[in-house]
Length: 276
Length: 276
Image (cartoon, rainbow over all chains, first blue to last red; front, top):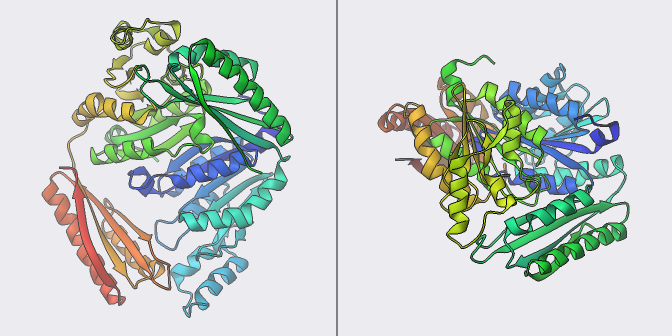
């Protein structure tokens, strides 16, 4: 379980805050959206953890993430209500006080004053950040995000409303994350195989996974396992250039297609997607 | 953070296993479905954790859950392929070996033989369970679930394919979980309030949350916060009988509606749902 410093830098944790997720009222689409963004930027997401609206639980998981990841992103719990306590949980994880941040006050004040409204006590609450954190501008809502850097680990807190979370991520966070990791090109390719059950292909996938340890390889059964097996097989390859990543993925797909043919299966389609 | 034994018994952790979740290809609908089921059965879901297809990560989180929860449910990683390693992770968490379970062998064998297929090495892999675990019958797929009980903590492992996960949960797991907790009736009621911004209602929600600490109370902004505020406000109340839970929820909703009226807001609808 030892990790080099470089591996830690490339590792990301996502911490979703909210009882509404834990009672199953809401599906955690924020986490999957962030996970895809981080993956395409070259980060390895190691945990997605949903915690209750509770300072101790938030502090516990942020504290664990801090020892393992270079980037921790929290979502939810930044609003004005009594149970929005993400930033007090983040502060607690590092023994920091929450402080009224002047830049955050301006942001919140501007948001309300441009709409003819006063700063009430509950609205000002959104401008309290852990000491040393910077506010992240929210161009579509009231609550600023928060960026705290401790010993080269970034703890980024975003709102739970998807449109606000995505906007702050794309406008404020993504440019920072792009600078922190050497740009890697990532490509995901897939084939759909028919007439080969997953359990039949399993030993071949094992071989390929051993041969190409840096590549992520996975089969997903789509049709019924035996009566009409359809397998969606994916290869996620990364390299310094898109050309290299593509060559690697293509090579593996070709070997995979040979195995499928040997087993009497059929290939239905081959498709790839990359970020650029 | 001290918990009584009874609280631990009522606490559930959900551990989702799978790289496909961590790269954002798949949204974790299994976890929200299970979270809702557990909540309606009277359990408090304290964590939903997604981990990679890696024995150490699975063992780590299962081990943590064991000290905190009465029920741990894992999803994913029970199939025949090389990266299906949930049960070896569960076994590792408790220092147990994986053993070929005779009942599980029968289940897997029946599944394949009824379709005219042999038991290959990769198919038999699905019949290895942690020592002491019982297989849970899967009537819609090949891989049995696993139920391991250690010191009155249940570690339940279900497949990742949603139809199989749901079927095993409803047919095999739910009856067991119902017996373990005193039946509690749960009701969720909500109102939609217009013309009151969330930040305006926040201090009133805080008051109500303090007055009724056992009730889960939450507001979700739906329209734009200020130009056309629409708030979806929910109350989740539980009690020994549905009648009592309903009375509690109704009382709180009425107080809430009074606050909304005081603030010049409008109530659009009131709705409730309960399990029975």
